[in-house]
Length: 383
Image 1: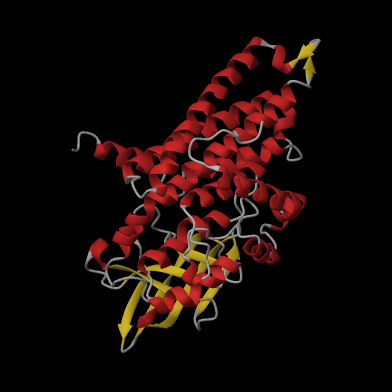
Image 2 (image 1 turned 60 degrees about the vertical axis):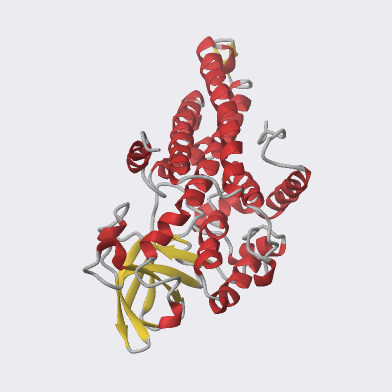
């Protein structure tokens, strides 16, 4: 079965939108999925088509070229994208980066970047991770030094999604290296800026159609007007937007798990061994029954989280718990489903192999499961 039709967080308008999203993916994504996996990125034209179809940045206000809808429309796109088995970076653009401009951007910045993000003419990236700094953002080494009316950026970033396609990137850099978290700021760097270079396209275990790159900054000079938000408030801004980012990843985990489950039901009910289908073995039926129950619980939980986020009430601890539970569940389910495929599950021609590879990073990016447990634990017992 596809993503459940009866959901408590959606209304008829969202259902109509979902149908249009499915039709778009059936026409423009699914036929190209294998090729994009081989080429290690989606076609740039796909971004423009997604923008024309209204799939990008649904929450961007009308004043900046968007439809001004609620987060539930973002969730629909993210669910359907993950269910196709694609790792295209649409959620990064819509669920994560757009809000940095909506929440913290100046009028000039909003007008310069948001319309293009909505239309797909501009592909955005956000650069936080470095070779020596991942979850511990305070440890970044990239600096932005004030020089007259400009900031001069030096450093490098790695594991940056949309790093090859990006037309601009939001860079987390230290504007005051002695101030710890209070010394981090966010700056906008256009891809044609002198001294900015895109490195190699990184060779990942999975999520091959999501281009991921190294980025280099060698005396990149940007005007002070390119600071996104306030100087020294970068860490606070990132923390403020983490709930939606982690909810987006939880949604991807749940929808990806559902697709793996559906693929495995189809496989085990047709493949035979010892005179019966794989599904006829009690172990198969019981394991899949357990995961069916977990998927039901997961969808109900996501509905609650999506409503809370749409109403502005999802806390960092709740979003972290959601990302932790849904991505851990996804990994366990996908691994079990691959096992039920037997040797076929190890063959790349079967979708379950890609789903297994793609699921592994879900427990790492956006906050590792270990970090998420720390976040949740710190919230326990608090009023």
